[in-house]
Amino acid sequence: MSKYKSVEDCLQALYLHLKRSGNASLAEGMQQYMKGQFVYFGIQAPNRKKILAEYKPDLIAFIKQGYLEPILLQLWEYDEREMQYCALELMVSGKKYWTPGTIDLIERLILSKSWWDTVDHLGGKISGLYFNQFPNERKTRIPSWIHHTNMWLNRSAIIHQLGYKEKTDINLLLACITPHIQSKEFFHRKAIGWALRQYSRTNPQKVIDIVHSIPLAPLSKKEALRLIK
Image 1: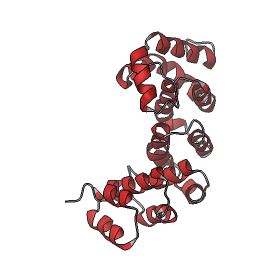
Image 2: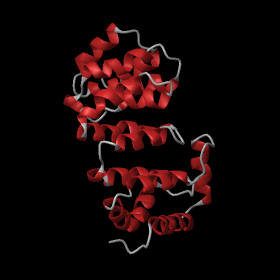
Image 3: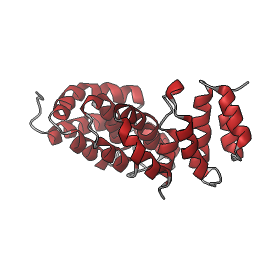
Image 4: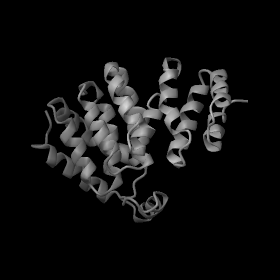
């Protein structure tokens, strides 16, 4: 049981605690680093995680009761970017309460307030965990992401196997990469190189073969081969 009467009360307490702990100088630097797209309290990750830890038992108690989606969506509505980072951490902490339908929430978050900091976590880690838990959902969702008009869903498809190592489906990875190898978009090119570089830790020769067999952009090729001597 949570000591808070409602999700809203708990999230407001978290918000006020983070706000009190903010640093204006750090906030300015963080905002500049993110090209002015988001505002910040100015709290570095270790301190943010420490503060969230005080509220996490209560929030997990609400998640157990079926409030995962309302909690994450409310955190996503706050202006301060640290609230979205808290949402990402709670998403992973609450993964035992995911259902097949959680992919709709993941996709919604990818498409909202989209930038590499949240998308890479949602696409590269959370989606990977989700598809391991619900492998049948990958058969329909990943093809739609590959060919979607939104580049962040494309990027999520490309990087969702980052943590799979020897379990990587290389044919699926190639299917995710191929439609975007001629893209001029930086985030496509970087994602392609990142996904291949990560797989090179498991099978470097396969990555060399791929690089030599398809016309990757120079950035993608450079990133793919970075770990290969």
